[in-house]
Amino acid sequence: MFNRRLFLGGIAALPTVFRPMSGFAQSAPRRLTMPPLLDATATGRFRLEARRGTTDFTGAGAGETWGFNQSYLGPTLRLATGQTTEAEIVNALSEAITVHWHGLVVPGEADGGPHQSIAPNETWAPALQLTQPVTTAWYHSHIHGETARHVQKGLAGVLHVVDGQDSDRGLPGDYGIDDLTLVLQDRRFDRRGRIDYSLAMPDRMMGFLGDTMVVNGQVGAEAVVPRGMVRLRLVNGSNARIYPLSFADGREMHLIATDGGLLDRPIALNRLTIAPGERYEVLVDFSNGQGSTLVSGTNPNMMMGRMRGGGGAFTVLPFHVDTSLRARIAQLPDDLGGSRPSGPTAAEVTRRFSLDMPMGMMMRRGGDMFAINGQAFDMDRMNLAVQLGATERWQVSAARMMHPFHIHGVTFQVLAENGVPPKAWNTGWKDTVLVDGTVDILVRFTQPASPATPFMYHCHILEHEDGGMMGQFTVK
Image (cartoon, rainbow, N blue to C red; front, side):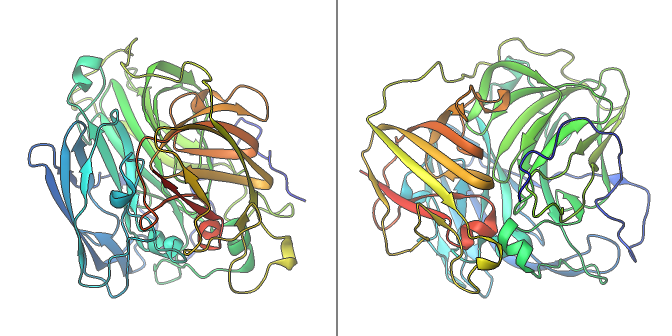
């Protein structure tokens, strides 16, 4: 049976990788680089081109990868809230893609879901009218049945929604120096160093788990930071792995933002669990001049008592302090200028959702294997019709394993987890939440979505989403 609470806290051992990378050359850590910054705040426009490339992750040789404007992943987009940004998305690949703005609260026509495919050699040009608070979001391809493979190959990137006020808030904001964007992914590689996305039955049931840690598309890198307060924008871009994060020396992480934006004040944590699709921002104090290592416990989702993709604690990213770098922020701010939900409000409608998966060998071979409320996703079936401006209470349950549940085009409040108040990292505004049992959320619907371009709700274990654990809804 499944043990859904394997990780009990505390790290006794610290292996450097999930498993030894046999046949790969091992070398001294190199400095972690950030994705290129594409700042659209002044121009109000940006261009992304999905293209093929080659990437050598391990030193064993280069393999084919996909990316936006580069070989793997995409640039960090910086967009201003309070203005409309014109996007131009060009598909230079040989198959259709989409670009979903995960975390942007925009109308369905600009959301980039499965109905908005971009054919080869075609261009999509949405207008992103942003009115939401500052936040860290991300973007990725969302073709139904191909999302997992597309993200594996590299079709993903990060978004910063900004308002230019971070210095006034006392927050680090020097990109790549004291403000680090960290895309966490696990991958497998073959002997020639190529990404290996061959799926066995456990991968299809539990979701793909790799055996090598990749941060910003780099293996074995080390972050270099100033002697001061450093901001980490953590993005879980993995297909299925859940990371229970902590620092090896026990130092605190100060949570300052969740999916939906900044909190009202920092929250001190020794451990932070981040599931696929979630984003968190934390401040870490390096003012003592000592580096540390960000580590992860085992993935809490287990299959029949046997872990896939490594069974112990492992290194996510080492940090080295360079005293020659300018340390802009020396102390923790008291007031972040953001918000947290103040408490439950009246909900016009209550809905219940069951995240359903098959029993072991009862999985059907081929076709959809997963469902919500007993129905696998169908592009031609609308599951819900929601009223624009409504606030609804959704109760989401998962009986057999943990599932990260994401809703497009909204932010929501986590009311309770298994009948008790939410974990500290779930007390801010969210658009993705890890369901371990039953989670009650309060959802605000402020953006329209037509039958032609509906919003999605789905598990963000990408193999589950592709397998049918997804629904769609209109808002009007």
